[in-house]
Every structure is written in structure tokens, then in C-alpha cells.
Image 1: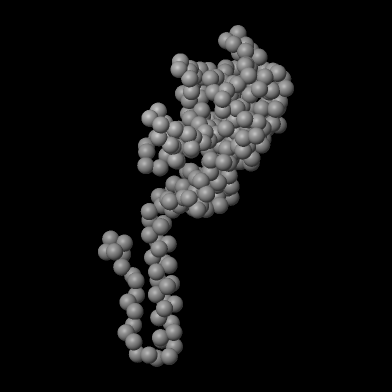
Image 2 (image 1 turned 45 degrees about the horizontal axis):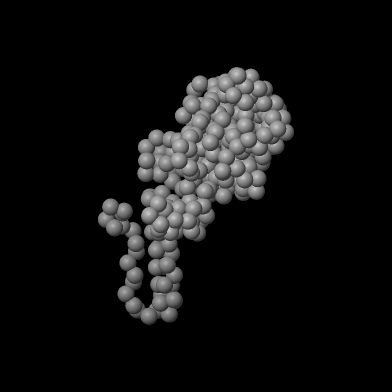
Length: 282
């Protein structure tokens, strides 16, 4: 960053209801053309697109009475459940509530699934809009997630093309000359959150232009999947109750396996206590 660096985020008006089969690149391009009175697109701009309109255009719509089954179908791993709320890992590797199945900002009686491949969706939009406007762009597709240990929700990037979503600063130095060992800002999520401040949740503005981050543009960037934490580095892979139950079950199995040979030969050794205490007693 240089002294006086500025960031500009502007919502784009005029995008109506999206239906399955709509050419989203054309619709967004038309809205951006109408937006030219407020400034044309420029090389280095990043477009933040709400995932809902991508899902609608791609036909990712199911009946509302199938919502629970849709959540199950989109789930690959349950992280935690509390009452009717399920925190799960979905097919994209994203951990969040209800596998991303959403009933807001969609027609009555329907719910939306996330795009099948948000990175590919972002790539198609970027290439079409770059060709139309003759500028180099980045595109991120955004969705709303809660955050562990913090109240409220924020927008994050779930799909990206042409833009680095992780700014790896490891090996560089801070203002005091100390080497940065672990600093990798999640700039993709920061872009999504900034865009949401002007898009809003109920204002019908699913597109924003983010200007001032041209240094993040990279045609070879890997996409938003690069932000998914691997199981090997995930220190909080299960909810508290689920982790306790899994550990208890493993302890019971190990105890049973250890006691089985002694029982088989009639060694007369003392019987191992059966782990059955409640969690509050442990």
C-alpha cells in the first residue's frame, strides 16, 4: 500500500429479478452500462456479485417444503447441531448454517442452493464482462456467513476469478523490520464485506464495484477454494458436544477392545469400569 491509498465501493442499481436461464453477464453488463454516468469501469476494478443472483440464473432453486432435505443433500459433514439449527460442511467445503440453503430474497415457496461451482461462475462472468468493456477485471461471488466466537454475520467470498483472495505476506517485513511468519490477509472476504456495506440485504442491489485494489488482480489466482481450511489444519472441526460424544464413543470402544482378550482366557482380572458417566460428571 502507498501513502494516500484510497478504496471506493459503489453499488450498481437497475438489476431486476433474475430467473433460471437468464444470461447474467448480459444483465450485469447492461446495468454497468447504465451506471456509466457515475463512472465507467476501469482496469483494476473488482466486481462483487451476490451469490443469490448467480444461483437463480443457474436454476439452483428448490421448493421450500424440501428445505430440510436440500440441507441434507448439500451436507457432506455435520459439525454441530443445536435444536433445528445445523452447522455443516457443504459440497463446496464451506462450513456454515444450513449448508448455504437460503429462504431470503427468493420467490415465495422456494429456497436457493449455492452455485454448483462459484469459481467457475465467477470466471464466466469475468471473461464475458472483460470482453464487453475492454478492461481487466476481478470478480468475486459473495455469500453471508456467521463467524465462530462472534455474533452477527458478514459477507465472504465463495467464488473468485482474476483476483487473489489471500494476500500472502509471509517473508516480508513489518514497519519495524520484523519478518512476518504467518500473516496472510483474507482479502477476498474483506472485499466481500466492504461490498455488502453498499449492497445491503434488502435493497435490491446485488452488484458492487470495488476500486483501488488493482494490485490484487491475478489471472492465475486459484479462486475462492484456496480459502477453505484443510482438515489437517482445522483445530475446531467439531462442535463441543459433538467432539465430547465422539471422544466418549472412542473411549468406550478402546476399553471394550482392551478388555476382550482378558475375558476370553478367563484371566480373572478385575472388570474394567464401564464409561457411562454423564458429561456433567466427567
